[in-house]
Image (cartoon, rainbow, N blue to C red; front, side):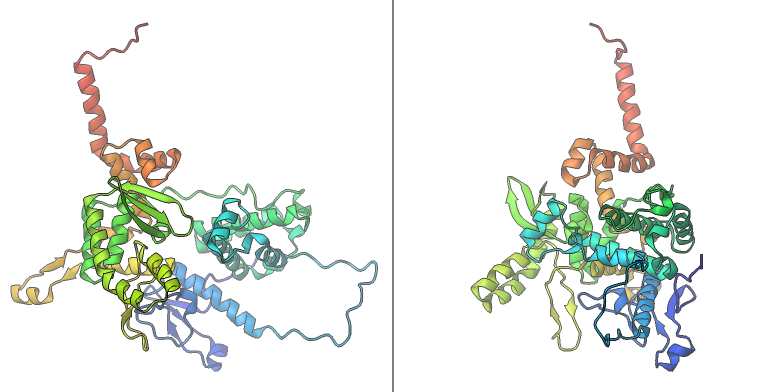
Length: 477
């Protein structure tokens, strides 16, 4: 099976990715380009929007982003080279009897799967919620992930992509998995094979093929793929304080609000960005999911209360201005938008935008970019340049926190579970806040609490008190 470079047209200099066109592409006018984010990405911008010749000055693409850009660029090149479909000069006649039928390829399978009802998500939010609950359609994130994994497979092995499905066997797909594992990593390898397995199952149920070469069994199932080791990472209190201090200092308090919201509710990033504030009820802050309508009710911690109050004060003038010029129908939309707990408050300095704040909901990719930038500031620290010059030594506004280098926004959810457990909360108490299952909460604590001797000390202390009090080991009837 041919080995394909995981990142065609991309070279690495000192660990940084750069588009490196060959002779043919240079003849077409393409120039070498640094693979970087814009300093202030427009709403909806993603890594595939970068075009050869762009001069962005934001953070550099990660290795995974560079590989994904390369895959998308290869598809663009292939689309340009593909000849236009010729119009038949005469009507198509029926296929003569006895002629071999066309082969059902992997490419055709994915094309039909992507056009199936599972991917036809209605625009109406209520109807979308109903169909998702009934498992008629996939969630937006699931659709995006399936399409991304299919694109990886197509770019990685074009010959497999054009192969008949009935010719696939388990040894062939295990070979694909091993090559993906070596070039793209375990997470991508598992994701691609899992997506392929779902697509194959969909096609088999509809009679498109029979898995002839694999005795009727899905060749992507039961490959014995490796399981990634559990991620052992939760934030310490100084790390959380550093992140929030940096967010406030650089003028991005909404990212600090999101961090605090994740810590005190245990909600996922995507869920936090969709939360609406429905006010207080009996001392509990009531949040509502904008898309699903699910309710999250938590006892309001003073730290969270202060952040929410400051956020409401910041957005008050913008909300009043928007409502003044709005029609009655528009007022309802504006009121609903400003109920979002987290809104993008960054000033848009693009030409023609008037240096205004958008006050719009975050898109996940853009929020992740903002969090990564905030983390990099927290790792490096913020130096007081004037005070340092006067004192002759480093004077920090926010001290460097290098341990945050490997901390991700997703780790806030596990941090919430861990902190509640360290505070003495039971598993049922924890999952009533965060929405974890008991099994998943136990899994988190199994890996995280082993690092905290306080829990072991508390257990032994309780046992010592029981023993010294003459604790009974026999149960009388």
